[in-house]
Length: 141
Image 1 (tube, rainbow, N blue to C red):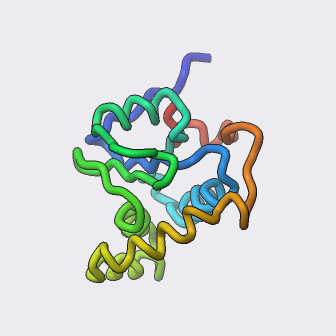
Image 2 (tube, rainbow, N blue to C red):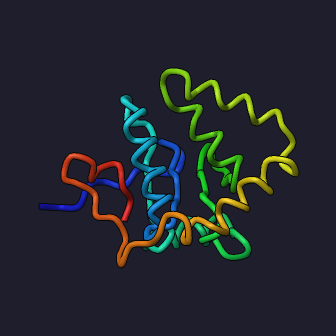
Image 3 (tube, helix red, strand yellow):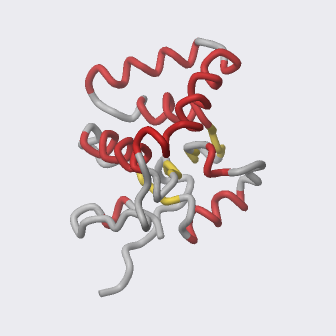
């Protein structure tokens, strides 16, 4: 079976996540369950697609410290990435994007606190997530 076509950056928002982090995997599950239009796409930061996007957008620092949302030809990091991803969901979760009005210098320290402790609190996996056949087209490899 040929690999699923990979959407272009312009086609759909792509969330890059730490593929061995249980909290990050839970975040992907949360988003997928509330995105019935299947607009969001995903890629592990450790994947070839993740690496290509990190290089393309010249993400500085350790990319594993942040979720990254690639949308509209731009890359968004940390709390901005999460809140912008929520805008693509249906229901009340979409309303959480109003938190973007809070300055990033206030939002990002909270995000960073959780990011620093996520392995200790939620654990890690031995390998990156393998999507189910039904969800394979939502994941870039």
